[in-house]
Image (spheres, rainbow, N blue to C red):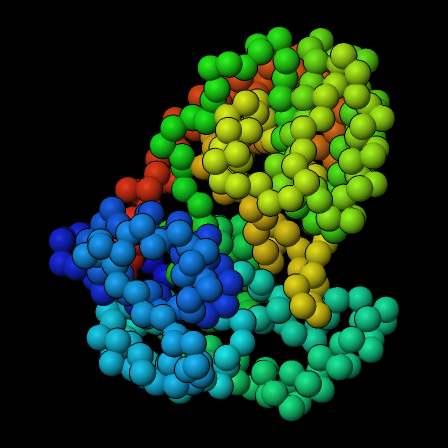
Length: 405
């Protein structure tokens, strides 16, 4: 049973020291957008490159936020040592990502209550039992085990650090239940996932100029078959376009300029007609352009390649790792068709439809959602997702922090 929460609350500030030395800049920005709504005093310990990507420079005058950056010539070890007084001043020490710097992080003072967010469960907890394709990748795995595990002592140092950390939090309830069911973490150290990676957008992203006779579908993320099965969507559209009662526009909301995207784009272009059009961008999609495009979208399709890997470890989307489609659905208030192996918990399951990973199953769902405008009928469910509102998340996390301090 995971950690229970005392729901009493007062307005005493909680000093939350956030450590991010790796790469999840977008999650730091989301954290700030959420936690600024409750009585947190936030201190961010990070690297200059990460901080730049958070786009939090605009909030440098906010008294609720303090930022400490590693100096250009400073080692991570010296930076962490310089931050020791800050770490000791924390009420809660929050690790947003831990991927390396194990030796340096072990040198930190752990005088405050600490928690860590886990992004890749198999990589962090099961090691040998979830090596990715051990026969095919034997040479790469052997190199990893020699360099990182034997010489770098990664597994030993990671265990030492995790033993010092008081609590673990996972991206959602499904992954939390998976970890607890496997017994990989002491249940007393597992916190409820009260701080999700995303939050419910406060507005519906819609455009006033949309042609109501056209249905617009989007796939988010980089255009590559390694993470999403774009070929499956192509085959499904090929099967069902003649059955649709409205023209369809497909927007690829990700970088389609890489070499591996060329064959995907080439396939989709063969479908172009008065019944189908394609919209894509060869390069990085700026935030403003992304928001403009997503405003015209009626629903997403998420053809997630469920079996994936992180470093040398096999991960499973929906079990050991979370897909960003959950954040996209929430932030933009867009329903989505999702591959059936990726099951979502309440209340997100009320705004998704599932398809089996076959062209026939997806084609049937596209016809149903397009001809019956199913996406429009279920949009009202977003109005009943109070648990994902920023203020609710902030207050619940504040109560959790107060209960474990």
